[in-house]
Image (cartoon, rainbow over all chains, first blue to last red):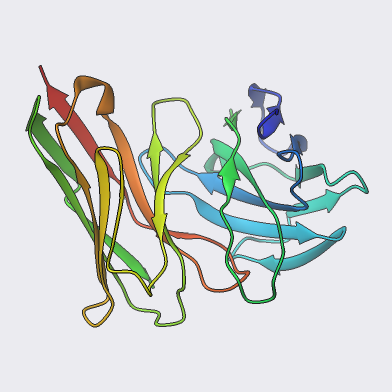
Length: 116
Length: 111
């Protein structure tokens, strides 16, 4: 049973460029959440996708956008990259079952984005 | 507004000792409290989790103690080993919302 996978592992971009990160959830999971983790800090929530729609969003500008596909995989897009976007981008998957019940979120290895 | 406060920021423990990390939360809607372990360059790995209707949960050398009235919970690592050296994050979540993480504790277990 494959866990959460992310690609690419590392990425180097320059300011102003655009980037797309990809995530495949754990088998049986239907919900994908994206987090940004700056060096030495805890992960910060970007947004969550369920049933191919953005279900909730954290305090991130609309330069950050995403998509979920019918097979539950997801993409994170960041436009007009800034130096401050350099971070580890984490994807977490979970299964949305009973309403109001929190479920375990499993994280992928992350994509290390460096903006020069 | 930081909704989950974690302490200490760093911790040094001798091999075989007990590591204790504390967290406090503000949002009474939180209903699930996981702990994650993260090694450098890796994603966080779910270690153990608890729901507020339980005061303690133990899995191997790892125990969560939960105090609902004080809005506090802690992770105890018994018989700490050098392989436990990592950064530990407490987190909390309400319903189907996003995880809110603490600031992390860097644990170093000395041989």
